[in-house]
Image 1: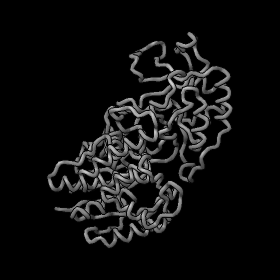
Image 2: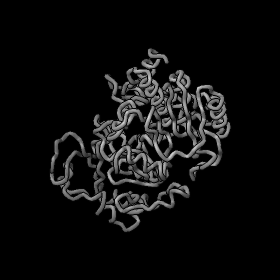
Image 3: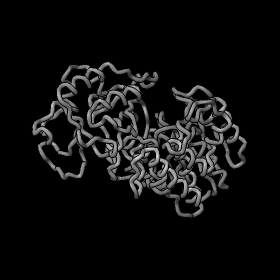
Length: 436
């Protein structure tokens, strides 16, 4: 049967349905609106933008711009819609959200290869090929069904993630590599220690407890925050030394510059196999993004840090994709079921949409007994999918587009803007060669 089922008509689901239909495949697109809406959705349109109307930077020497350019070259319906609904936003691509969603809804409804079914799905199909793109607020019976397919413990409902910085932006003149009590210290940089003296710590602590937090949606406010993922700023407000006896404890560490134990230490843990990304251990946070940049840059070793992902704390359903997904976005346990969108472990509007395109191409290829499309790691889409399906990633949290997930260039370019342009050009040259 030359047909694919797509569950969910958000950005990822619409991209998946449209891509598969454009490739000549019949599609059943199942969407629960208007029968049921998640707490975040207000309209009956497909591809509804529930938060910002910005799709981030347009220039190709940015991670977000490169991602969008790759998507254009793969025939993205979301970027087609963005072009007709754009509003002035400086260097960003922003859209009039209702016009954006209405354009996509109309195109999908007019597509003769797409059959739209209005229904609330609580079970995954047992036959045929299916793409699950039900979004970050997936819950109820369907969530239980997904957990059954992926394995108990492989579906999360809460995103409590620490910031991630690029390795090459860490100031190693103010940092050192060591394990507590010299345990298992390979010297390979699995942990990087960022020490602070008493004066530096007290200034940092004061700014941390007074920094501005991001507002929460009503459905986020209902979540119970457990001690193990307490926001760093909340923990800091318990007392002047609360985080110094917690995630910033210096015990078992000696600063080689002074020969003494530091007053406080922020530890950085390797985020990916290539060691291009490090996360701030224990720094789950709900601070606004500019506040994270300002306050966390007070840590001496991070004074020039490039934040590839800021910390977040919100409701977010996502699977433990490094353990359960193949590189083509199909389930290891049942490779006729593909995942796309934020449920698959990518973060952001365009990242979700991009995963929908790739999932659809691979679903169609599977129908046609063709090999899967595995984009190279030096492309932004390929690097993101590689990250979310990399079995070496522990304590997985969703990831958005950033240059830190790309492998470095063969030749080091010191100027950041020139380096980013070279990284982008390397990817775009590849896409020009493969065409569609």
